[in-house]
Length: 162
Ligand SMILES: CC(C)(COP(=O)(O)OP(=O)(O)OC[C@H]1O[C@@H](n2cnc3c(N)ncnc32)[C@H](O)[C@@H]1OP(=O)(O)O)[C@@H](O)C(=O)NCCC(=O)NCCS
Image (cartoon, rainbow, N blue to C red):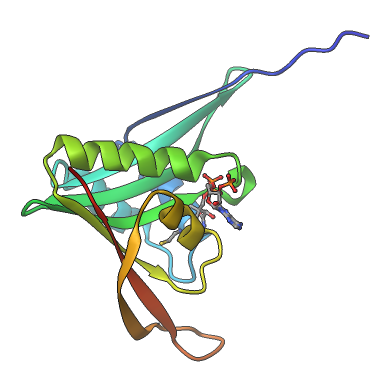
């Protein structure tokens, strides 16, 4: 019997409007209120103020989009608008890779700090952001509407750059 390791390659690039449907699908499977393909297309078209960075994964020649991050850079600050990884590819390090690339873009575009909002009960994202050096600088009570219970609160997190 022969053993071999399948090679999985990844790279991150700017999303194109043709990616809108795939990204909307990943977003819809990641959040209670997903963004439509039209909303996603508008985000991608807002380049360069809004950056939509997609992580492409290639496994045995088959290429798929595994996740994406959206950031807005304006007025010397950056804001992470969303981050989502396809549920089937989570815990592979892709969320971290996407965030690191987003931070590189923010730094390159001379943002002094990066902000984001996150549901305080998000057990995946809060540790990810904390590990990257984000710190909590505010809390917005009852910020997220929920269909199945009381509204959830948001943490406002910040990472200083430079
Ligand atoms: C949050 C999200 C993007 C993380 O993506 P991911 O590719 O699974 O994350 P990574 O594999 O890069 O994990 C990096 C670190 O994040 C933390 N983390 C990620 N998922 C976690 C989980 N389910 N439980 C605890 N910690 C977790 C860990 O610290 C992890 O490091 P480790 O693997 O060395 O322990 C993904 O879970 C997702 O798309 N969730 C739904 C959408 C969402 O909540 N987005 C964030 C909105 S603010």
